Length: 308
Image (cartoon, rainbow, N blue to C red; front, side, top):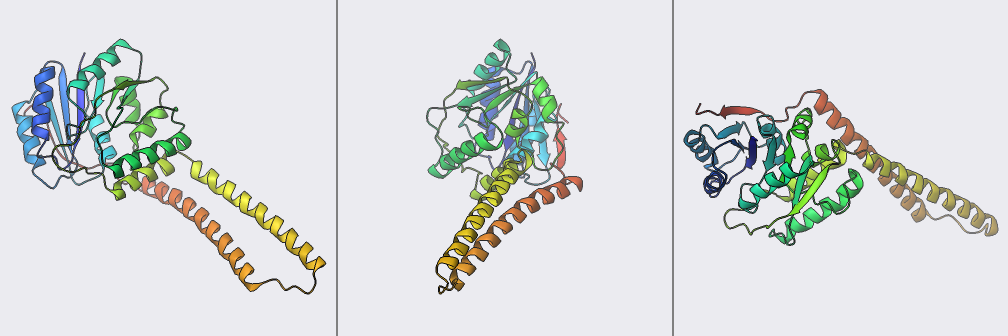
């Protein structure tokens, strides 16, 4: 069975060479494809990946993107070149141990899963990254109907059928887990070790995490629109009750004037709700415009495979 390991690469000149050498050393070079996608790295990752592709021409497919498009876009680029019956997606920093890759491939071959996610008892991320992941999980439960207890790890294995379905998506804002969950419910999980990052720094900044959440919110769910409808109904109900109470109070106490401050508060509250709803609608319309305008999901500068 042909197997593919897909690694999005971003500023990982300190780790990518040893990671690839370790993977090939453990799995051999028979029926193995390693897809490296350089997502606009600003260090020496490009030259290292290029050397690896020349050293292992029958194994490595190296895709160099024209600029940084984000991890999920880079993964989409790699999936378009993945040839294996099973495709493992993993990070470039050794936090996903290479020895766990074999377990993922074995688990996929023994079961009828379309995707196998991994989880760890303790993740060796920073406090900020762990909090971000926790928030992401809570939101995913509501927005994209994620099965309860499923951890949407970036370290996972997809079968060929699922890869073919995912790459049909051509929009500029891909969210891999959203695409997975809308295609299948044959989902497995295995527990793996998660190691501490020894070299380099995480490429996930607050800005990138927010961008990822927005992709989930607006590209794979109409939940925000439903929330805005509920907010509108709620505040309309509150306003109706408040109006009735005000009229009753005025009838019972004719001498009491309705205060200017209360009027301003009501105006500001309803104006805020209206702006939130308009912002949500604007975000959806903006993304539709960018999609219709054929904003690229990724742009490939060059591809190196088979020694070329």
